[in-house]
Image (cartoon, rainbow, N blue to C red; front, side, top):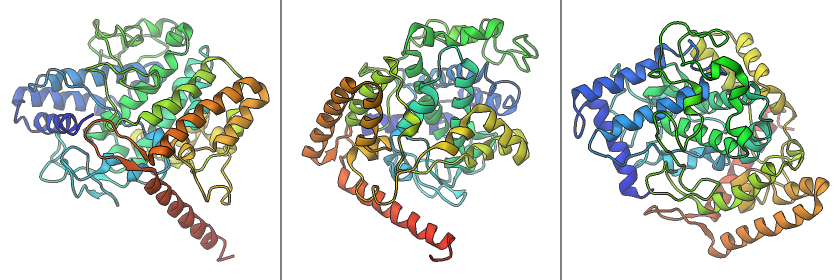
Length: 440
């Protein structure tokens, strides 16, 4: 996205929040009703395996339709691909202070800069937006290992893992995002658009993946209602009568709407598609061949590949505690049930020595290229050679430029700076580890 496009989006959120600019009091009221819908229905089915992904796909589309009524007919919700910035998520341009970004924020105090600092307040209660921004979200290989490797016959496993990962990122950002009022944080929709994009990538793996939720029986075709039990509607509809089946196909969903995720791993570049806030061509070039390996059904032991960054279930647990009123034991059981806890326990970390010189591939994916290729070679040596050559070509092109080019008017971000930040993080982590061991 260009700077002008990003500013158009942040200004649209400001306008509809206040009923000013291209918005009015009636549009502001509809926006507040939409956000309240999420808050009051939080624990009434919209975060269960049946409704979670489909309901939030409808939620994003409904916001887009409201924002277009502010006089911006081509506006769409962008996404933040946090899995591509897991090495340094809080150094992302997303948290910049300019009017086209979202501001910083730490220690759970009011966001200090950007377009959503006071006097801007949350739409329904006039309170300020808060953040802490702690920990790391899952990286690209985490996503491939946990969710993209789930068979299409195991919808509840897939949905449960996506929900657990999604909650963890909510509480990585923390503050307003780690509460039942999370939808009032402007970054909420960027995060959920990325969750929706990841679901779309899973669906693109095969026709069976596209309709994986059809395995859940009548709940697939019944309208999404509050307090539905075993697919039997209860309460009232929260999605204008739509059922999950109506939201399965992004090419034709929710009344005939067609949505593309622009420049996603499939290489789409379609005007009007949902866009990443800062488009990294190299990210796409790396992601595409990795997804091809998954889509070919090659039985790579992704879990054997060690990662640069830590990953914790603490934020997923906290999300369930803060948003569902569970105690820690109950929240832990939900994370365990999703399968996320078992994955994190067995997840391997790169040793400190091998992490001293992270390269561009590691910074993008979270793992070393050599470790990845070694695992692929165990099951398909020819594919490993081909994949290694493809990835090497991408990285050589990157190193030749000495930078990652960001599409639009955003300035380039040098890889050298990213490496320096990663080394600093490793050095700090070593210090914390020594302190924990009593200085040994």
